[in-house]
Length: 390
Image 1 (cartoon, rainbow, N blue to C red):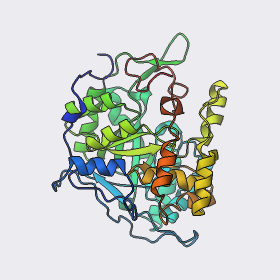
Image 2: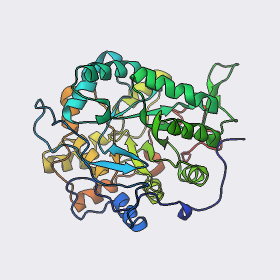
Image 3: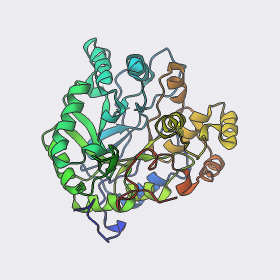
Image 4: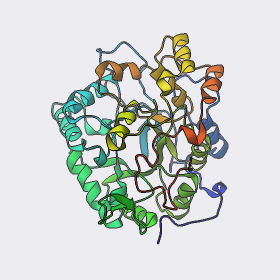
């Protein structure tokens, strides 16, 4: 079998799992919120099987080391889990900075930590969390921890051992969310020593093994990352436990509105990785192949900077708020305490309708994507490569 099963049915057949209108951020006024509008359209009657609602998962107040801000007390409740709207990304978080960064992120008010064994820092994050749990400052139940199945482990028999690696590395008994990181598996070419697409990756067989992890209570919910609309729909049609979350690259240059709407129609929450663009990607690409992302830096965009001055906010605040007002979860990353705190300062203002429209006009479509085969090497010629070619 090559890649995921191909099915021709359209998205309208997705079974709604989220059954009441969304109440995402504290103050969104009457501005257009695509995810919220989609949920209102498709989910009108209460159900315990999957609910998007606003709840407060935090038992502690934000640390006094930060200027006073409105705490991120909103979560998306879907598929039996509550996903905090504001998370902390850990890609390229250096191991010697993990202790201080994780503690500072939690002290600031963040309760959602996104991890991957491909980042090389899961064990360091686990040690940091263990210290904080042992001293009683935080407890496991307060946090939302996510992990991913790497595309070099895209085999059904690898699922159990990868989940075990997370549980052992993070020193916890369960993951809140476990995702397929990329829809195309890779293997090492024995001739050249480089990654090439695995023609035998079977997404559905892998998903069935992931469902067993939920049944065994090692994982609470399942998700996908970097999937396109067709791939999501195929999975929805064939899964016993449907995905609760889609994690994908989203920022003002790559807004992927149709993908976001499609996920929402299917009752799938959406998380934006690289919500600020990815300042560190340029150096990463230079290190591996001497290239650039050729997209530009949203943080340096003139319109973004001007809107920031209007509200007395940073460009990062504007970019994050833009996504939050669309009902999209964000997981920015920084290892600098002042920037962790500054980035989190997004709950005491809202962008007006004109700002939303102007930021929406910055979308570059398929040319705004930064993470392509420059990162997912060896996958672009596979029929299940999820992104449009540029």
